[in-house]
Image 1 (cartoon, helix red, strand yellow):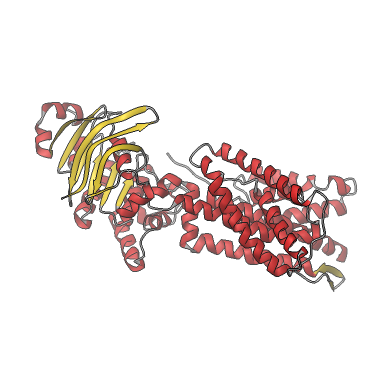
Image 2 (spheres, each protein chain N blue to C red):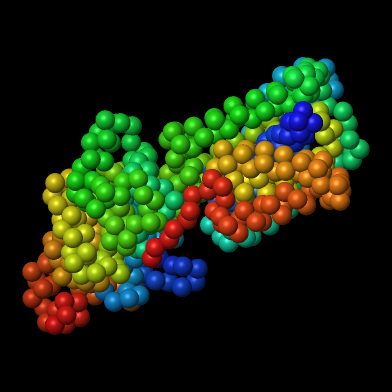
Length: 293
Length: 236
């Protein structure tokens, strides 16, 4: 029994990593109506900023704050300098532009820091506590705590603030929003800035476990996209629940289904995701989109 | 002084020029109509005013030239454009759509009062206040679009084909509310409408457009008395 719980707890730790990036994907989707593939690239770039600062002797927490601020600026700058040219056009073109940004950002990180992974200092003490025979690291507990705080904050932002309402309106219908006097470009800029800032938090949370490298989030991005979509794409709570689900199912499959083992275990949660989406196309927490004409 | 005055306004989409020098004016607390066949330039004239199409010529609002200002700026000045095809924000609830309309306002108490007012004006919306706009019927969406424009507390509402695709009785109800709005809230209006009977229930005068030019201007009674206008727009 305690082995089972251990497997679940380890799965939740993995899920927390997916959830961190999934939340940023949900944020940018809510704020711009796009799935942003550059999310991973922005997060890694901001995390490298934090890495460079810690190398220079800056404490991790301070480096995180700096990365969040610079991340916000980077996101806003990318919207202003690149994405704005694609607004009002075909959304598919804009999504391809985000893929291009991902490649460019990864390339820049590699140019400055190389491809080999570097150790990254943790925000939390590097200790493990045992409760009733189950071991869990303080790092996982800390990561999950921060994520829950971020999730609640996002939910409040979108549900209960004027800025959140305006961002949702602009993402849904920029033309009508502009006619109601919403500053569409500025709101999109804020949306990208917030997503990149959140990416910085996510990157700093997961870098100690993954080791920092330009490709650090490549495979995480796939899980994060799956989590965001399974969660309903516009729901922060949905993304976190889905990420936890994927992390746990993946770990359980690896541990209990002998013929699957470590190499194939990543397929299991994706098969589960497909089955769920067939039954419930709007995702676990997504709002069913009904359109009458 | 006129509230709104267009002087020799032209507009183009890319290389296609759609307006070839339109002039008309709207007095304070007035309501004027734009009539004409499909492609006459009615919608483009409204877009020129709200700043969503490139123009030349002068567009004066409260004496100030607003040509070249984008839609968020003209909205800020007090121009509320209800676009053709309703233009509600589909994934937002009825109430949220109304609050988006009031985005530029800071008077929270008055906003709440105005929400109650439009829900009284459109009782259908009262029942659907928590529904997504996309789930409303066509008539309800049109009501919501008008209500959202009103929530901005504009000086003038630009109304584009509010009857489009609606059953006659529904269109009548929408226009009854618009007439009430005009008089109770003292908001001026530019009304684009294919159905001149509906338009004439709101406006004092109207301009008839033909292929991007002004063909005719007159008071409601003058226009309704003309055989040509009756045949073209009033169904006989």
